[in-house]
Length: 306
Ligand code: HMG
Ligand code: MG
Image (cartoon, rainbow, N blue to C red):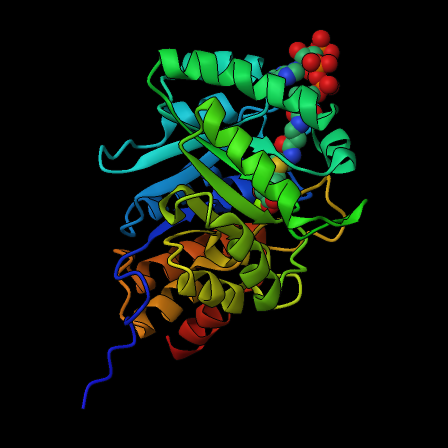
């Protein structure tokens, strides 16, 4: 008898690959633009529908991604893929408009201290920045997703109350953001925390407006994804080979590895459109270039079976 594991779960999900941005922003050494470009081009061959390729942030704050213009200009553009970029302020968007971007991500958080550390302004000042970004973005028909960082815990303030996440999420959507991505920036989430947060959010926000973005500090990201799937969440951020972290969030480890997420979803017969062998190859490529070992268990299993 064949068991339908997808009963009660979404049949199809979207994976947003954030490795080139969330991953490479956190590398100590500056990586040559050609390596980033080759990595993104390889990711684009895997069946991914959205890749966050870089950040138009201040080069003083994130020197690792100061080649954003060159990277965005040079990568191959597959018309079936959304190539998004992270934007912290109006200047970032104005710079990005010179290379005709169509998808951006803005950054928000309910934590006052994290807001100061990461964006040098308060939560409400940051919302004003996002309002200005949205006004310009909408004139250019740009799709805007909004990250909400520290949805469970903040490295500086500790526990964050779910009601604060809800009111920020509602504010971002009513300002005109198309989607919110719930960031477990320091990876302290567990399935119980995921259930509690989604139980607060989902009576007010439709699940198709919510993505989850789990860092894997304590090895909980995959079970947290499973918990989110149980609530009908169908958009997952992940990084090839488990790259990732935030230089302004002490303790932020890599994102959940795209390979591990695809392995899980394949096993649940949930469609992703992403080819596991090709994503593992893209992970191998970047880890070799960084002279590092992959953080993905699936990836390591693939390498040893090669
Ligand atoms: P600031 O220093 O307050 O900015 O930084 P400012 O407006 O005072 O400007 C200072 C200088 O920076 C000026 O240059 C500006 O022109 C320049 P100067 O006159 O001194 O030569 N500047 C810029 N240059 C290029 N592009 C820009 C830009 N803006 C200003 N966009 C700012 C404020 C928001 C810019 C800064 O704090 C910043 O860039 N923060 C971003 C930090 C960051 O990227 N963190 C990591 C991403 S968030 C994350 O990883 C979490 C996430 O993954 C989700 C999760 O895991 O939870 C998304
Ligand atoms: Mg992140």
